[in-house]
Length: 169
Ligand SMILES: Cc1cc2nc3c(=O)[nH]c(=O)nc-3n(C[C@H](O)[C@H](O)[C@H](O)COP(=O)(O)O)c2cc1C
Image (cartoon, rainbow, N blue to C red; front, side):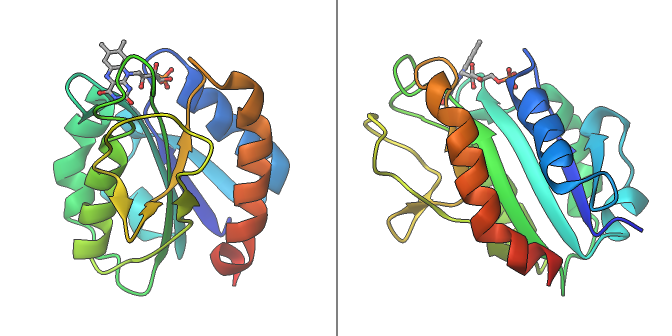
């Protein structure tokens, strides 16, 4: 069985593309990919490690598919599980709520008993506010294809190197 379940939602494809690239980078035998529009509670429960991914849409909100899946997700006990989060946002157009939706996944997973890993430095971004900062760091990997597309792949690679040992441990 794969060790990591990657659960994502995406509106215009940025989050989906990175999710798929992570499967390629780590291997299909290591990561199983789920669009949350088709995922179940059992899908979440069967993994010891999870990667959760959403863009921020609306007014600092989760993508619709995650909103719909959220009550189901929140019903899963995550104690003993390790969770990493990544999110897409737009620091220029939405600099007052940059990648805000990551905190919703973080707060939920934490309340469900998970250990959250994969915090990310706020250096090299230009925004005024984000709810997704805890102890001076983003709670997960913040990505921005609207303004910093050329940095996305390198950020993903660096982040994966950082979290891989803990997710696979
Ligand atoms: C209607 C709308 C609202 C958005 N709201 C936010 C926001 O509140 N914060 C943010 O950082 N980005 C916001 N964005 C930017 C998206 O998160 C960004 O374009 C992202 O790459 C989309 O990801 P996806 O292609 O996986 O759907 C918004 C985009 C749209 C179209």
